[in-house]
Length: 138
Image (cartoon, rainbow, N blue to C red; front, side):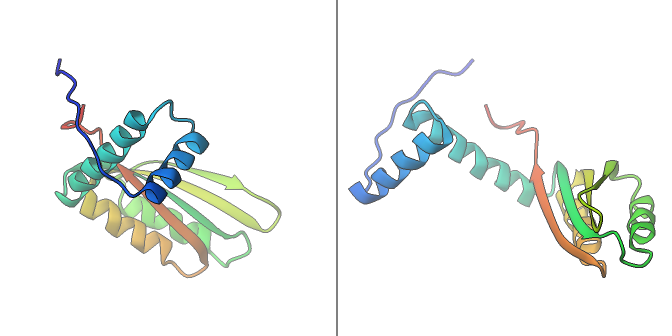
């Protein structure tokens, strides 16, 4: 188990005030917790760029009435069955659907699949969230 190191940070007072407001809004107990999360976020982002094994959650919003769109999206997911772990289809209202696709694999592959699904004609919005297990992060 590693020890704890302390360090100082110099910030303009307006920046620190804004940060403290955000810390309170997000429910952090102190600045250290918030800074640890920020550092972990940077380290996870670095791992994505190294094209290592990652996990992605892709959300797609589209019209239920878009001609053959659901079949196209399903077919594309089958084309990438090695990376598609799961998908869930949700009826948001009588006209719109949400598809949530969980992907696992190299970050470049997950990004590519997500771009193809998101850019399919009829998809209103696509958003990919990627993460790693943070194997190098404590």
